[in-house]
Image: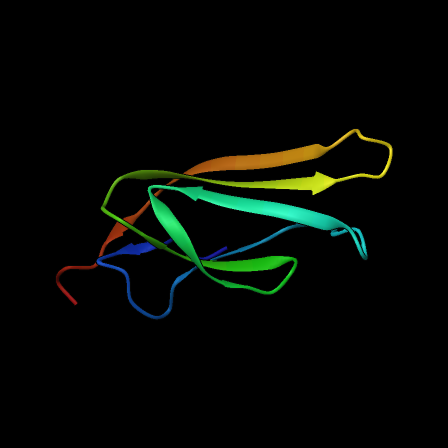
Length: 81
């Protein structure tokens, strides 16, 4: 994990889903930001402002029992860079 920075610039925030089930459909979302790149088990994000944001991944399972993983994070202030 690399936390996101505001204002957003490369390198973007990076998050990797652990124990990624091969071939599974995964829905990902970011509150207070957007997904810049999606590599299946890893996403790069940018945030809209400094402060708190949430990253969520929902693994769709064939039996209908989805697994949801999420976390709240604090963006770094990078305006001085």
